[in-house]
Length: 143
Image (cartoon, rainbow, N blue to C red; front, side, top):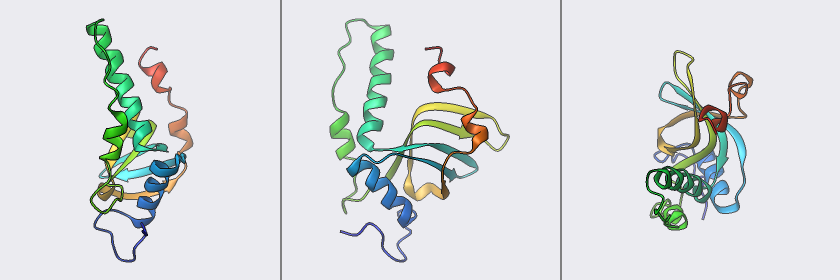
């Protein structure tokens, strides 16, 4: 199976799809900046499973604070497997420790971010220095 097909941009940039596939299948992480609409989204490309684990952990912590008897469901792996389309290719891209920068320059931090590959207008490897100088998600949330 080849993730990169000439002229197939319906599901997003073929090279970006390749990076997302390698992240999900091989656990490769790298710094990346995406342009999505009028936003810049930067962070560490990660696997769907790692994204789901992080999201599950955040949800579990929040629900446990509200209800101490709450027991987490370990469904992250099944959710990550469901992330592939019928052609067994990724449809989404996942970042950890994301910076979301609006047109006005305001930056919002998020421990986990997910977007549709077809919605990414452009990308570059690395994270701009001015974003790295922002506080970390753990600091921003008071943990």
